[in-house]
Image (cartoon, rainbow, N blue to C red; front, top):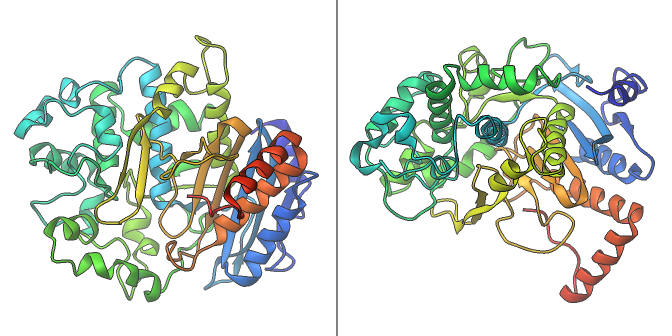
Length: 425
């Protein structure tokens, strides 16, 4: 943590004196972001945090509400939250480091480092294929997977190596397998687990409270969702298509009638693609470090990687509608999610990854923005969750007021469209 960030944390208002009141701070010009965050607390949230870095400086650091509804424990400055598939963006950050150190290349065939993976014609599948859901391995398809199996990453990787790939379409997203593939590649090339590598190379050097597994219960927010949230998966669980069921019901990530992610077995499990926990402040800081690396002179060592390594990772690899989810995905060569539908605007060059239930974690390199939003209440993002979108719109408005060039760009976009902004992808 920088000295400036430490000063800001100490100048916050401390423990919550009202659950609808935001704790923390916003820099001058970002007051509307606080207003929107507090509106979310009143209208929708159980508890949440939102942090933004602008050109390396922490300008928004807000938290509020309840971290644990059962005990009414308030959300604190250091409360960490599980970010589900937001974990995949942090795996992509670790992959930057692996590639910059020379132990991996994005265009390497996976079998170069993991010979068993070549079975069933998978000898040409590359690292980029694996992290962009283009390897034909969106799920374990030939055996039943239970929650206890999810944390045995090496066993799941062996199962994927033995499995025949799905040949079409090119991109098929799945919630678990990307993490197991990168876990095995990390072990094969460094002798470390992905978790150990991330901790040693990224989290500890930069003082980031980011890790897998939920840890002590008083430091981590309780996951909150109801059966209405879980019901969004019914169309997958009940599908006539075996592949769809394998992706989304083997196992069901959010079963009805129980919040499995609060149970001890999963709280302490290591599931690479799904259960990173961190503060919004630290996750935002990590994306800010990547942006700083991208803007360095070519050849200069970075926090995580040299600029050329970051550029390669952010270069578009695939843009396609996902066949099971039914909306467009786009991924850069290194596994960061990009804009599913291209458009101009302050966030046109967005990269990062969102998480199931509503968390959002992204960088906008052109604007120098890194952000992270971490709620503990999970909502169906396709229908009734506008929390992150509302915060991002308030952030865009603040940026336009602060930057005349962005204000002029916004006028041009509104004129060309004849309407307001779309909700961010």
